[in-house]
Length: 77
Image (cartoon, rainbow, N blue to C red; front, top):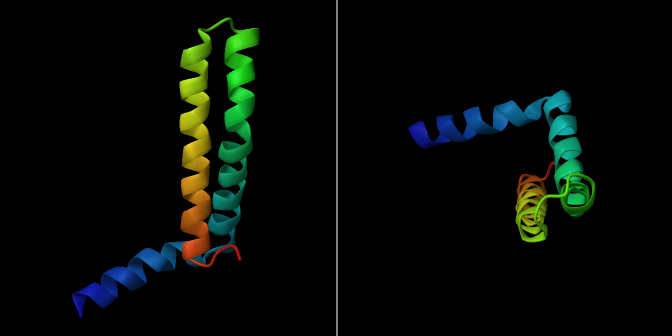
């Protein structure tokens, strides 16, 4: 019974259209911003290429995880 309450409480946060829109926007920013971050860090800010690749890859992976989460929760189809 408490498990159902926890499930309802966690999904009730995602019922708002505003929260859904913000999650989709962050997902797009992370997914498409990861590769662009590599360019910005390495070429414009003159940071080591491998460090910028690591930062860009992490951001891209976070974006993919958010896409997976949103599809799993059927926020995006």
